[in-house]
Image 1 (cartoon, helix red, strand yellow):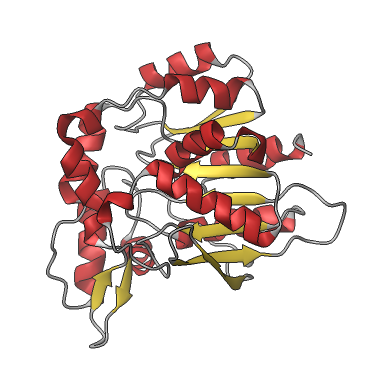
Image 2 (cartoon, rainbow, N blue to C red):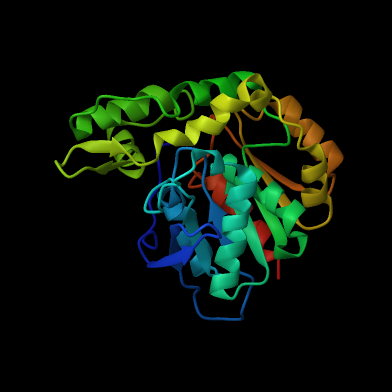
Length: 298
C-alpha cells in the first residue's frame, strides 16, 4: 500500500534539549488534543532515519489526546553530531532520552521505537525502568536476523554521489524497495525528502552523520548477534507492550517474533502484511494497532 498522509503531520513545534555530554539535540513536539491528561509518547527512529518518519502516526496520536515528542537521535536530522563517534551506541542514546525527560518535566512516558529506537527503549528500561510506562516496538527484537542487519550495515555510512532530488529518490528506492514493494514515484520522492536534506549548494545529502557506522564496524561480527533477551523480558513482561512486525521483514523474522510472543504472552501484536523492515506506521494495520493499544494505557 502506498504511503499515507495526515493533516496533523506538521502540527508540531521545534524543541531543543542538551545531552549529558553537551550536544544540542532536537525533537518535534506535538501538542495533545484537548481532553483528559494522558502519558506522553516519546518516538525514537531507526539507525539512519530521523523524526520525520513519525509524521503521520505522531499526528494521529496527538489528536487522540497525547503529547508526542518525536526525536532526532544524536547525529541525525537536526540534532548535533557527536565529537566522539563511539558515543553512537544505545546506552548513550538512552542517556540522551533521560536528559530529554528531565528537561521537559516528564517522569514517565510511553516509548515508541522503530528498529534502533526499539533497542534504545530496551536499554532505557535497564537504566531507568520507572521511566518506561509502556512500549511499542516496531520491527526489532532482542535478537535480529543476521541477513537483515548485514543489509543495513552495508549501506550505513557509505558515501553516495547524489546531485539532485531524482537521484535521491532513486537511492531511496534502491535501498528500501524490498520493504515497500508497492511504493510509486511520488512515494519515493517523499521518502527521499525524509532521509536527505539540502546542503549549502542546494544538493541533497543524507541527513545523518556517516560516523554512526563507526561503533558497528568496531564491533564486527559481534554486532550481528546481540543478546538482549533479558532486557526484552524486563521491558515486555513488566509493563504493557505492543510488537509491530512487517510481514516481509528481513530483520525481525517470524521465528524471532514467535519467540518474543512466547516470552511475553501478554504482549499485544500486529503484523503489517507485505511490508518489510520497517513499517512506516502509516499503514492501516499499524495505525489501528497502535491507537487501540494506547487506548488501554493511562
